[in-house]
Image (cartoon, rainbow, N blue to C red):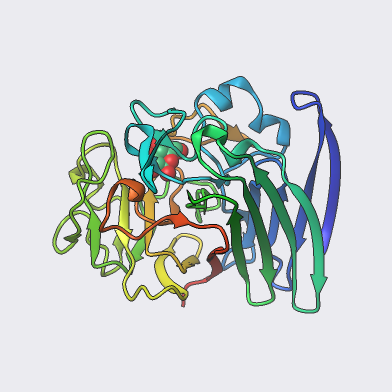
Length: 351
Ligand code: BGC
C-alpha cells in the first residue's frame, strides 16, 4: 500500500520534492524521497509489537539540505553514485584516457564526489501490485559530471514486498565507457533507538576482506578474516573487538562468499533487546560494513542524537578503488551494456 504521498516546495532547491510512504501487511513502513533517492525512515514492529524506527534519517526533507548536513554529510539513507566508496587521488584511466574527479575526502573522491547522486532531485513515480508496492526513480548524470565520462541514465526501483523485504534494483546505461558503482547508505539500528549498535549480534558471510592504507584505499591484497577483529563468520556482538580494529571502528570492504552475480546473503544482524533481525542480500561482489564511526551527535531525530556507532551500514559495492586495481571486479560500463545491481534488506524477528 501507499499510505501517504506528499509534494513540498523546498526553497533551498527552488523546486518541488516528493515523499512517499509504503506499507506492507506486516506493518513495515518505508519513507522514500526523490531528493537523493533517500530512505528517510523504516519502521517495523519488535517482538512485543512495538512499532519503531530502525533507520537513521530525518522526518523533513529540508533537514538533508542544511549547510551543516551538507558540510559533514553522513549520507543517511542516501543513494550513492556514480561511484560509491573511494577512488584514490580522484584519478583513474579508462581506454587509455586519464580522468580526474572532484575530490571530497582528503586526497580521494568519495561517494561520487561533492555533487554526487545523494543530492540530486530524481524523477519519481509510484506503482502498486497485489503483493508489492514501490517507487521508480530515474536520473540522468551528464557527461563529465564530477569528472566521470559518459552521459549515464540511471533507474532505481524500491519495492516493499509482502514478505517484508525492501528490494532495491538499480540499472544504468551510458553513451561512453565509464565506471559505475551504486549503493544505498542506510544506517540500521534495531534497538528502538535506545542504544548504539555495539550490542547487536552480527554474522558476515564473507571469508575475506580487502585491507586498506591510512587513506582508506585498498592495498590490493585480499586476505582471510580468520581470527582477526573482522572475523564475523560466527555471530558475535559488533562491539566485541571493535577496539582492536585499525582506525575508528569497522569501515571495511568484505568479499562476499559465493559471488556469481546472483543474490547472496551478505550479513545478518539481531538485536536481542527487541528481537528484531535484519538480513542484507546483494548481487555485488563486495560490501562495506561501516559502523557510523564519524557520527558525533550533530544530527538527531525526535530527540535521539545520532552518536558514534548509532547505526550500521551494509553498502553493496564493487571493491573500493576498483578502477585502479586490475585484479578487482571491474566497475567499467560500456555503451550497449546495462549495469544491474540488486540489494535486499529483509526485516524480521529472530527465532
Ligand atoms: C565510508 C566511510 C565514510 C562514510 C560517510 C562510508 O561508506 O566507508 O569512510 O566516512 O561512508 O558517511
